[in-house]
Image (cartoon, rainbow, N blue to C red; front, top):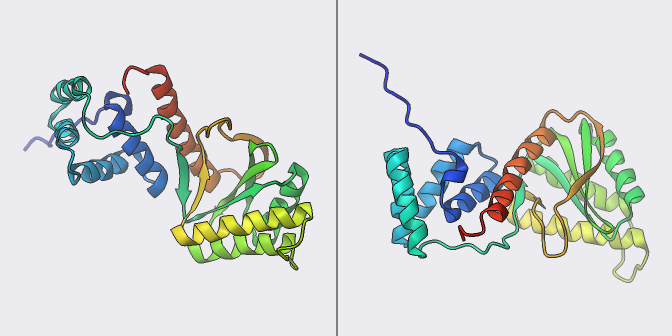
Length: 241
């Protein structure tokens, strides 16, 4: 018996905009590869109450030509699942140690990021500038969520161990902001960092690297490239909104 021919999966840019954004968000939130993210996004949309979105999504699995016709109908209808083109995309993960520093100078961020990397054996780090005096840090070693929380809390404590709400020093303010970030990540049970522009803020850019970059940093950069390609496609095809 001849082997069953594998079904062709369309490229991400072949989807209508709502499906592209849904796939991108699933990839970022659940840290999945493209085929798995496509399947999960499809399941989410099929379970929705938007008939045209379900029809267009289901048609993708009937073959590329049929999918293309359905996609064109979906675009022409002007109906279906809608997402704001100013949506903020980010990277979500519970196995990557990530920190978000606000109101912190670069030298302070680098100092405590290097301390955390060396003390906890995180292998390597990458610092990205999010906006003025705001930085993101991504570490390389894969960790369980419990250790992830412990490391984030450790950095906040080391920065200002006797933090008081009345404290007005720059270091205390940065430590308090990091503590607030830790609280929100614990509520969501995963860490998150913005990768897309946000109002007047541009996408975070890399300003420093140290140590190994082959594990969670490489995974972060891979997902970041995909999300940026989606945003670039959106800006190049304004008619498809």
